[in-house]
Amino acid sequence: MTTDSPGDWRDLNRQLNAEQIEEIEASELDDELRLSWARRLATSNLLQARFADVPAPTECAEEPWPWEDNEDGRYGRLFSVSSRIVIPGADGMTGAVGVGGQQFSDGTVQRWVETSGPMIDAMTADQARDVAAALLAAADELDRLNKQD
Image: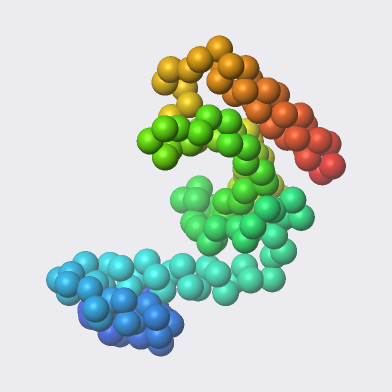
């Protein structure tokens, strides 16, 4: 049975793992939302199985994110290469600069410098220098990785 035809989420049980079934059963969602959730999980499970033999990029700092349909005819998964904390915030939030990317199902990768956190709002001069240094280091790392391809 495909993920497009079931009328009840339980019709997808064979395409879901035990943990997923348990989560759906424990949810307080109505049947329509449960079916939608089960379809998304089943589709994701099929994608993970389909591309299980594609090795992660060698520069991955951790396990890549799950495979997803990019809705452009290609499949991909995000990955992280590095992250540098540049502004520890008093509120527990931190600003970080790093290198990440996306791997496509044919094995090709696209990498970029990425930022996260509240670092762009207002900075002291020292914080601005730290951010600038982290951005330059990430740009150098990105250049090095792209030259290896």
